[in-house]
Image 1 (cartoon, helix red, strand yellow):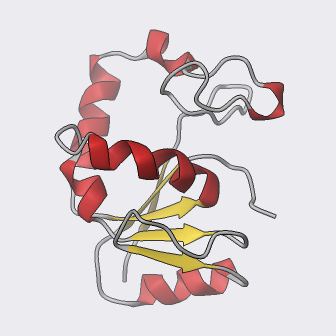
Image 2: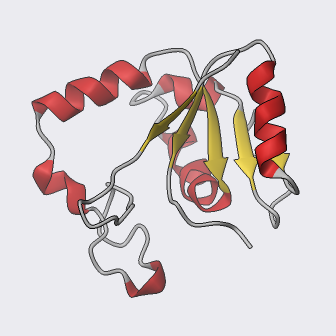
Image 3: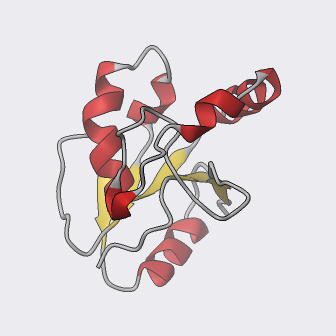
Amino acid sequence: MRKVIVLEHISLDGIIQAPGWPDEDTSGGFAHGGWIASYSDAVLGTALRRQMNLPFDLLLGRKTFDIWAPYWPQHRDAWPGVNTATKYVASNTLTAGEWQPSVFLSGDIAEKVAQIKRQPGRDLHVWGSGHRDP
């Protein structure tokens, strides 16, 4: 059985935000994108690299998929496994994308993820926002 491993950048007051650039995600008027960069250290970097180098597939929301799909194919040297991983995308609005391999999930996402977990395969890494796609 596959495990679901959640990797989040979350502040003590519950903000889940991308660690990238300041304007990566300003939804909801959030003006502090990329906030984690100034708090990062060697311990965090080592832990993230270790996790990123394990075999994995991805379980992503639409928003994270939309941000990552144009970025990671152009930066494959930084994280080669992200492009070869199967991307399971939970979305009620997006049904296809160019970043492959991708499988788009809609409807009862919890049941679909439970089915994927029962299949043989790599663990599922969850990265990204805590926002639910309508």
